[in-house]
View 1 (cartoon, helix red, strand yellow):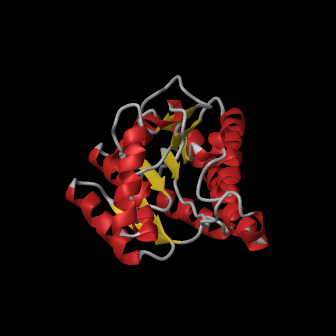
View 2: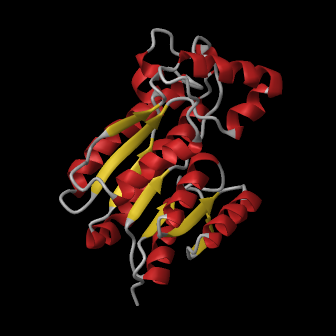
View 3: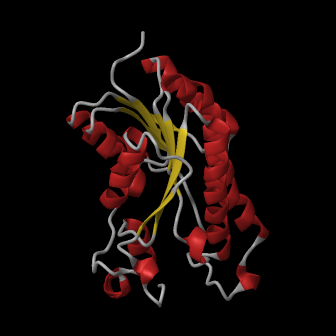
Length: 257
């Protein structure tokens, strides 16, 4: 039996942008699949918040780098609700390496980062193709402005997001006319990821610098990105193959953090 509510899979949705996107879609009337690899407690918390706004949900552990996990995630969603209307490819990883330290980039960095950030998004889209075509649904890839600027946590991360941007346009061609495929490309986003890496004092200084560099004098949040995700997922019927930068206009400044 097919449920009336729309259904979304949000990969990597225990914390950060993924969690905010799951909560936003749940608040808009969607049922959601919450996916995680290690952060089970946080995934359950996201699930509770989705339940509180009336969404049905289930929590699914698995890495998008594993093709069988991707197919199982889609099969579980369709098996539970009879449909799939949106895939949000948010799962991602990196390793922090200064851009000038080329010798610090290990071969396994390429394997790990590319397998999650690029291959994982492709594998999820491939697994979801039939279900999304049936509902004339959408794919939303969470990329990064790093894929355009070459800046970021590492050269491998920036390269992976550049590849994801290209994959977005390729998938938009491959899955048309039934499925729209777009990407949200955040700049720096205020999440716990950087806070944990830098420490409280350095993080506060970094946040102030990024905010002051932005045209809007606003530090983008996970909820800001989730707004764009919701628009691509549930609206924008004439938009596909687009890369939307969400960074409060930081990309317009001369100095990029």
